[in-house]
Length: 163
Image 1 (cartoon, rainbow, N blue to C red):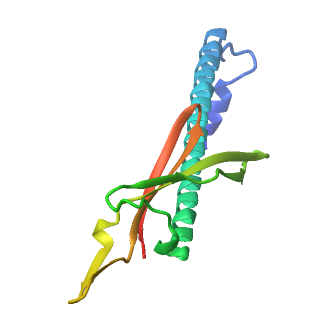
Image 2: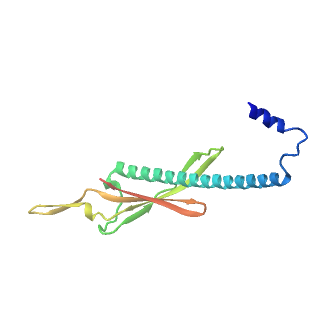
Image 3: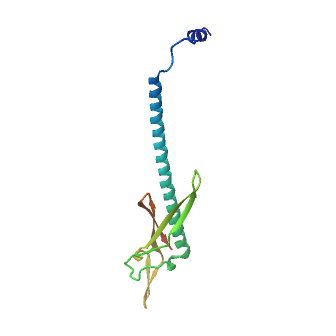
């Protein structure tokens, strides 16, 4: 208690103690640098969030394509008549939208491309004394989804076996 009384008794209205203009200007400069640094950090976090959101959307589109190929079966997937050659075809573009945190929506356009690999690995030969029958029981497919982010092309690839 004595310390508190002593502190307040030393501070009177006629005292010249306080902050000078130099201290105030230095504090304002430091706060300005901190605001700029926080703004840069926040914009970097926003860029990372948009890049991750775009990648998540691409994974979703690729998984949808792969699931739809698996649902129709390997017989319905077009492939090259030459069993040693790969077949590639591009599907129609897919647009996904997300709500933005500050209002509005973000729209990303994805382009899926499917490659059906040569089916030599997934071929069975049944032999009898009269004939040999070859049967393809599965196809390996690769789905590449590409999209544009800040002027550069991004892409992901997933693959699977369709039976």
